[in-house]
Image (cartoon, rainbow, N blue to C red; front, side, top):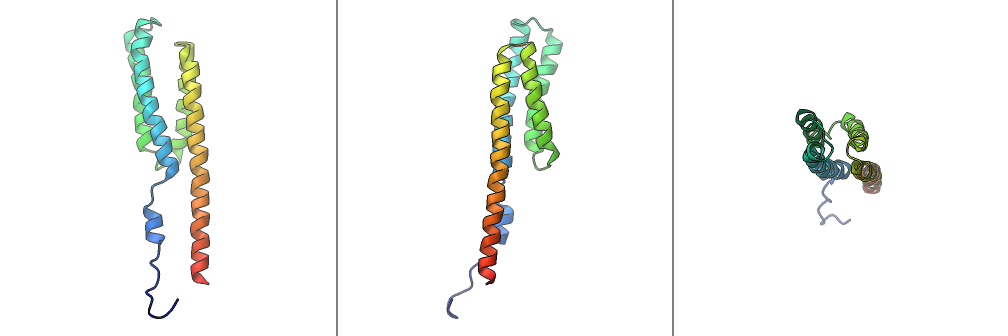
Length: 137
């Protein structure tokens, strides 16, 4: 670099403001799952014969938990709670058999989003570290 060229801007502030791919993908899965779980409520009432109060508390309760967890994904504990929601969605299959399939699909989507998001974040951090090392030398 010659003296007439300005120094390259430090990308560190941009790196701190980048959105987490893990958080974004997991929030998307939870948001879509909230819709699915909310729609299980009328199915539980009309087809499975579950009481209205129970169906509302289970179906809408799980949907609300999904939405709250989607907002709480800044904390690491929320990812573990997300796995618990996936188990609950699969267990809902004992009431509505199709939820075994839908729950398994969402559990696979959740695990993929979590694991792939972690991988992307690791690779991004390694790339930034390599860039900083290159700039320092």
